[in-house]
Length: 322
Image (cartoon, rainbow, N blue to C red; front, top):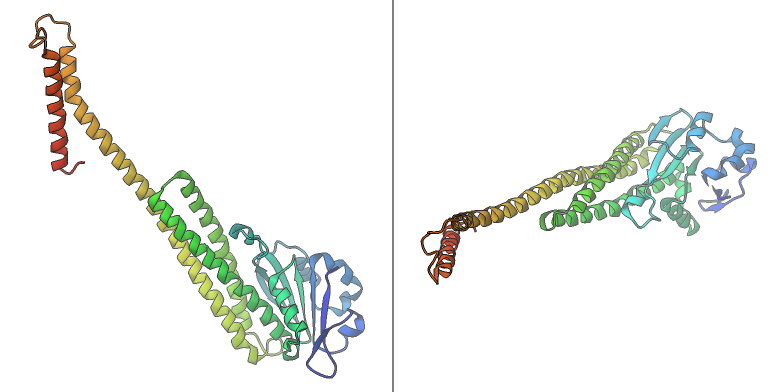
């Protein structure tokens, strides 16, 4: 069981870990209840003390939810998705971790589909004495979402580096596997854009949320997170354009190489054509042909053929075909 329950001390701003009890939830102190989906059955005895409609809790218990924002009056229900930063591969990180949040005036409840770096970071800050809960549950929500959005930054930068590498490969070594890689990157960038775009609207709602659940003093901070995520959306749009450019570069490189090959083959065929004509004529079964009976006739004919080939190569070079 991974339930973590933080609550303010009665005498001050220090938040400490408490045992999750009915009395603790009814104490009137700000709290943060952090748990994973597997821990939800352990909350059944306390469900009547926790905010949220049964349908919202059902959504929180299913890890495949889309980002969403619901204002239910007494609480806000939010679903965000954070990158799985425990994975080293970029594509694996897009198997995101779901974060469902119930925000009330008294506390914040988060339900995660798995380990999340942003939640771990906030736990460490509270352990070191951070006064997030003293500022209100909305301050704690901001800390979580700020870390969650910040985790997208290095991820997007890594995709930019990947696209630069693909552009160079598409230009220098346009092979089939490069095109397959480009199309795979395109699919993952579309997924990244969809995630960032959907969550940006949630942060826009939090930045203008009514008094009571999101304090006016914290709205600029949510606006700042919104601005960061908007920047990531713009970068993802640029990366999508880079994919289109990479496809064009690949196709142009392939066509240019094909044209070079066809040009070389055409030149070789053009040189061989008159030589084939000469050998074809002298290959006819006639008894009397010029030079046929001469002891040096074969070598003369080779010389003539060499002159023809050399003359054609010289002409092609002067015409800039070679």
